[in-house]
Amino acid sequence: MRRFEKAAELIERFKGGRYIHGFGVLERAGGVAAALGRRAALVRDAFPGSEDDVERLRGSLRAAGVEIAGVLDGAAPNAPREDLARITGGLIDVQPDVIVSFGGGSTIDAAKAAEVLRTLGGSIDDYFGVGVVTRAGRPLTPHLAIQTAASSAAHLTKYSNITDRASGQKKLIVDEAIVPPRAIFDYGVTLTSPAALTADGALDGLSHCLEVYLGAVGKPHYAAMREVADAAIPLILEYLPRAIRDPRDREAREALGLATDLGGYAIMLGGTNGAHLTSFSLIDILSHGRACAMLNPYYAVFFAPAAEEPLRHVASLCGARADLGGRALGVVVAEALIAFEAGIGFPTRLCDVPGFGPAHIARALAAAKDPQLRMKLENMPVPLRADMVDEYMGPVLEAAACGNLELIRNV
View 1 (cartoon, rainbow, N blue to C red):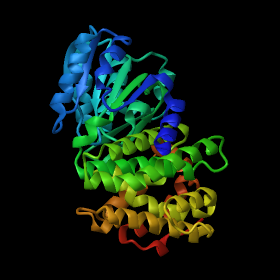
View 2 (view 1 turned 135 degrees about the horizontal axis):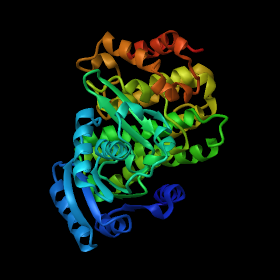
View 3 (view 1 turned 120 degrees about the vertical axis):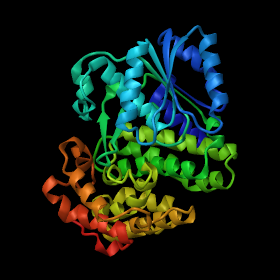
View 4 (view 1 turned 90 degrees about the horizontal axis):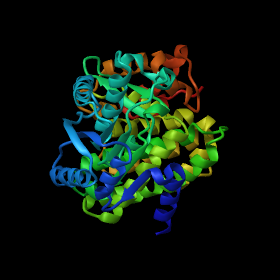
């Protein structure tokens, strides 16, 4: 199909020969790893159906002459600090010359951050923010990231999200130095992914495309981002319902794999913003992708006066009216996204999420003022200073809490 071919062309533009993706490609991992090193630490997830895939991976590594010096359990969702500490300790014990991660975004993120700590030392708090690892000036151990979920595209990007479960807050490393030099995604591994994980992951990919696209107005990457959004968003809107109805629909799984990989391209072109920033404060009640998906319609209304051109394009991709302007256009897009999410069984108001309360809004507003998360405020189509957060972001979150778009105030 031409749409699949276009998506693949964009991924090739993004990664070139450094990335292998498709069905049946896991067996190529050994040869890729052997070009990076000969003594491997394998950091792997365990999930239903994964044992056969892990054995295929181990067999491929052995056949290529790569010694598996240690096997480490991966990370829980949102890559908690406790798992990061455990994986870091394991890497210190094993002293690999290549790291092979096999898992979803949390395990890959934890492997990235653990290698930073193993090589550079210190506390993970020393590296949150933009470019801190690069400024340290020391090379990291090569990393082959093998993705198992169509979601965050952690295998392709410069991000590592780490969570402090005690405070309920997620923070991130943003650094080119942690991009895995080689990556593999065998879309066949996702055929056993449950519906909830599939939906969360796909809408995380959609959020990557939407947020970067709306924030790209007037920036050099705008034209490239329009291409990415044009290829990725329709694939998610069409094929996510199919994958939920039939998890073993190979065409749907390929579509979601391509689309979320393009989400990775998006966040390497530019940064996410409002919904991602707020999602970091909701990790105790919502998965990351679900939180972003729920929040993006409300931020679309807030951003609308500054992002009319991309919102018209998004409206057309959603089958909604594209002949409006300003706030009215944002409302149309918001209503289309909310309807899509409701159609796949997502909650569309934070008040419908068990455990949600005013403390979550207070935490999110406080986090938005944290200098280590400043890049998210600056990436917004309507950039906010810390002293504007309560006045303008507060009403967006109140609107998301009760589902009332009228509460949102435009700057």
